[in-house]
Length: 115
Length: 149
Image 1: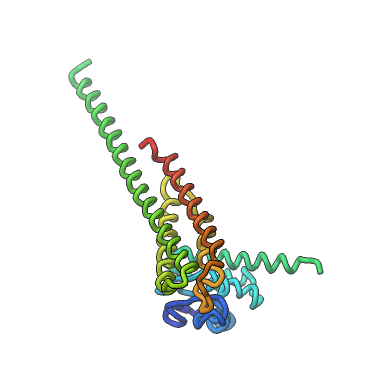
Image 2: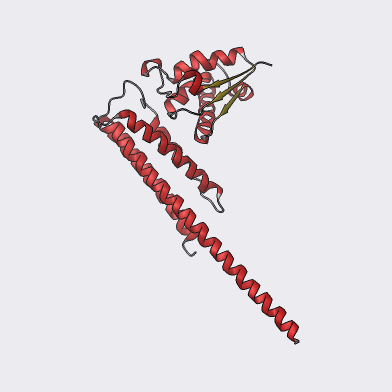
């Protein structure tokens, strides 16, 4: 079983910020596209450590994590099996799982919308 | 009644009084501690609001400095809110706090394209309203649970 841990502060940035590539250098979209999604496709389990950064805005977190469902076609049940998020700041853990649930809800809703 | 029985009753009364006094002291201590934490929450929410107002409305403010204050105060508030949820007869303030978190750190927060200005007035008013609502809830909860202690 392949396991990977990504320490955001060490491997990505101590100051992750912004949503899209166009918002800055260390954005949520970049983290998802270049770190998070590749790790999820190549490993059975992925742990994301959020500690030792300045903090996270909802735009960064929503794009990085919610985008896995919205943009990359993953499902919440798949992520519940593969993804572990660790942080000493519980606020972020709560928000990330909420963004995943919201993204899944929106996706399901759109899939059931009659054309 | 024998002298021994009188002595035993005396001990029971003394013990009951001591237990009651101890219980009251503990309640006062909890009340004081909770009041202190509540004051801390009020202060930190104030810091958050000031920093958000500066970041969104004041084009002369140093954005990076306000961002640091915003992150710090959000995390302190969350720890306090967790504390209030865990104590006896605690209060759940999470939902209102999450709205504040989304308002302050959503949109173009921390984007290189962010430009402070009056177009953010509505957002800042909404943050202020949600902050007040959260404080009112917590103060009402405190009055209800600790007023008579």
